[in-house]
Image (cartoon, rainbow over all chains, first blue to last red; front, top):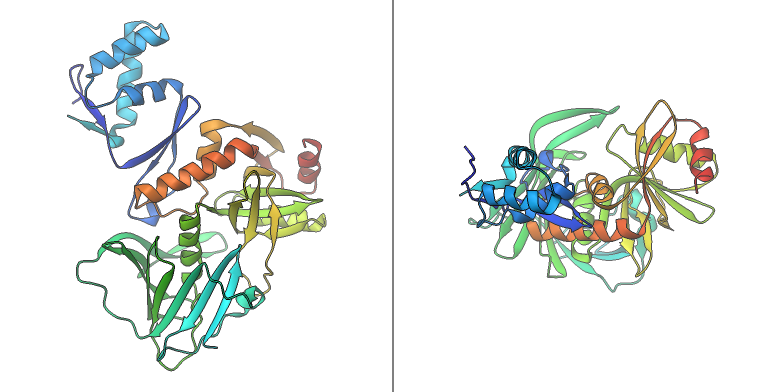
Length: 94
Length: 295
């Protein structure tokens, strides 16, 4: 279960490339049947992805999101936890 | 033949039978690609009989045998092809389902060496070293080495402008190629293309798939990601969206992060200079007028 004090890092099972303010993510797989899943992260998703560095905890990421995007803490919390849920396959909870 | 060279998509591929190796006979679809130039980008030596893989070789990628009949995919429960790794050497282990599922082949190759070895079952018979699926697999790994792109797409050239129509099976690649052919545009291919850059511009090449395929190429000016629709609609896409749409249609063996990062880089650079458009279309002549009016 991920909480405010959880520290996350990015999994090595995905290859990423930044394009403008967004990211393209492609998972590594050993089976041709699982190929061609490609994800994009919008600007907010890209911002959160970059803050997931194995050092910051979830609370710190939420705080930085409120500062940089001038949004309230509740919205930032929702955004970050939704991101973590959607991207859970490509995140490691330390 | 004991040796010959093919030029496919600008790659010069040399084939040479080893001393006790089989006679080589390219299939009809490759005959127009034979060239006199023997300066190979890759030389493949062909041997008879299939050795065992090294004991410590690890399977890194595999494909089931899926046959597509009238857009319906049929999964066969037999091992098709797989990629194995042992130190810096890679191996493709395959059967040849269009010939016989009992016949096996092993290609030993590397992303850094330019001389590869192919072993095929059957000492007395003549062998096409690019028998399916080796043709697509060898060409794919050539695109990996050269930082090029292999994509599920049809491509046409109309009055010097190259249009690429990409989508998975059933999205309308062949339909679109046929519409342009009826419009007297030159069809580069209706199913699979290789895209290569020459500095500031891109070219699309066909690869021999059908017996009557001739080597074809065209500049690439616009990329369409297609699907059938109730109306004709063009929506320009940019940035990460364009890259992800194109990536999703690229042929890719995503077992290795370096290979994947390189392809992602090539697609990103291409999408930054070639306009990319989402296209839903009704399969009739109007779509051609619609595309040309929006040039």
